[in-house]
Picture (cartoon, rainbow, N blue to C red):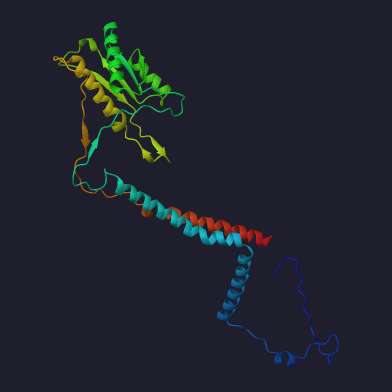
Length: 294
């Protein structure tokens, strides 16, 4: 019964009894008062409430559809996450079973591509603990590197020391991928060469931050090291060489068994997904109750 609703009680008086007299006890005792048992009352009230809720849900079709679909939607998202993780582990050569070595050929040095900045530099270089002679030797090595790489011509930028390179990279982290630090090149000879190859080993992905990712070792570090070693062999070789030699190297992973994927999306995130789905339905039901009371 709603608040404010007036309950009207109709009493039929026996005309044979004058007004003000007590009603006939025999008439009252002859009236049949039906008292329902608890199971019958429970079933009747349950049926009435179920019917009312069914009508209310039919009127609010959007909220009803949301309550029915949110659970399967979250379960589908959880299943797709599990399938994606399993597929990634199966296609990853580092985790999938490898019974035979898989040789990866080192390709050409990848030129830089501007990302956030308007321009980029293929590699940076400096002389550590050097003088004018060291800087001259370093400039000659860089010139030979440019000739070695051919077209398109690589771009380079020189710095005073390694600390200046670090400061430059911290201020502009996406300008270059490789830095060469020549340690006192005037002391180098046929039996001793000392340099440091500094690289950005952060993986860069072309799509969705995890698809079509490059390997910094394969794309930048190893090709640059092979090119630099080839130039140094030509520079410090005792025998006269016809043209700059080219050092070619490949690398391969050890044979290894299958490494199972330790991340189980169903076990690790299943309870969270179910909790969110239940909470979502709970909020919708509270909104329906508030709307019904209004």
